[in-house]
Image: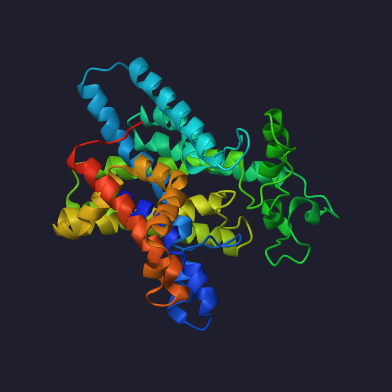
Length: 382
């Protein structure tokens, strides 16, 4: 679990390698085109490897919950004590998300689509559902969340002649849908309408009209569904099933999620869109998360190949630390390299590769910080 989390956080930090720049410089190079695609989010529907970072992080919160609750129960903590901790954790995650989103603004930037805020908004509900030990309860909650969320979007009216240019969407944008799928179009859906009311309740530099990426506060509701899938996986990992049976169950659930998500998209019922966390995305990305969890479980726990995963464990055990480091001091480290060494060392392979080399050097600094914390058993937990 720590290795999987470390893999996810490394993917996030690896944005510093800036493969997109190399793709632009060498547009015919298939390798840079492939890496650039999987280091960026798709425009709307679909999925790249980069799109699996946030669902994996959310999924792993659910995986970890049964272990956390069992540990706290063993210490004799009551339900009220544990729930109080869940509420505190939720509040800290929400505020930390707002803080990180505000770092380049002149005042507090109240927005709640950040990964940490999304997890924080749904975490108390995850705890309450997870407090019931029956898997059936988790499945009922998941189906209810996805069904109600889909229905709410479908019932929100899509008016003819909507001015998409006013919400940052070009009129000739190729990602427009019609029919049921049209209710999930960018910045003209229920979640966008909610944010035009909700986010304007907070003090802002200027009124909120739309999110440029189409992200929305209400995505925390289906994100709870992703965490519930992780809860199911965590309970399976803690069960007495043999490794063979466990792998079979995890793969079956993963395949079912991917197939169901694609079917919803291909039949025109619901698109697979991460940015508004559609029900189809919950199923598709959840299926992929089951698959990745199975891969790490098989390689590390079943096959015993642990040495290669050590660097990932170092990162994964301090996931909050690396998340904050990347968002807060990446430019400071890059500027420090330039101040003390100039641009020359990073242009040894030519100017085109400078962003890649400075990114590698910055990632190395992050890893050394995390390795130092690991050796001294300094782990930031919320």
